Image (cartoon, rainbow, N blue to C red; front, side, top):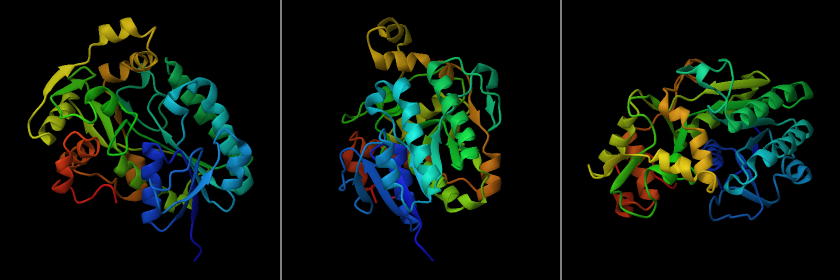
Length: 329
């Protein structure tokens, strides 16, 4: 039996990295396309120098691949609105040539207030934010690309956290990397439900779906439930428990962020998605469980212990964390 091959764009990011690791564990040969290859990050992959914005680079790297993981974003999300669709076009062009299926890590930004609180894959997408509208454009483009011969798979999830999640609400808004956790800033209304996605679980789910991608529709969509908290502040309490019971839970200073948002890009990005913190958003994974039989799910205390250890919040935890899944592998 021939070894399956996957091209991963964005392996230096959290989702791309964890999907690549999960595919390798399942026996896939993984190629990683990056402007600056970093073999030490994932030695088992074949690293290729190239730019995801360059259709020729992507097409050349995708030769022989049955899957292209489109996990790439512009650095620091700078010019995201201008670059994200052209980057996707490069991937679609490569998929048409190679016959590969595109995997897109999805978000719930597609959904506006009218779709909340319980989100199914086919719920109406009526976003009222800039990022949400662009996400809808991306998914519609992939749906149209299926008619051109480019099949795709989208796995939507809530907010990412995990050892490899560099750009996330958790690592940029709730706790401070590299320091002991003395304060846990919760961004949302404490009684509103919120969904979190532990990246190693998400990567394993993506790989399980891609192992069976031949069984999927040309344009397939699934929801990853992850760690859902019907009372959102319970996640902050779980962080405190993983931190040995230490850390004061405080609310995010939204008035100050909104006041400074015209001058600080990251504050603008945060403020735009505030509605997903103030309102309940729960993903329905019935379709996923029906197809796979289960959804990978690491115990929340283990997941947070590994995450905080990898962030340098208590490095000694790496030696005695209780989780069965070591990180890094």
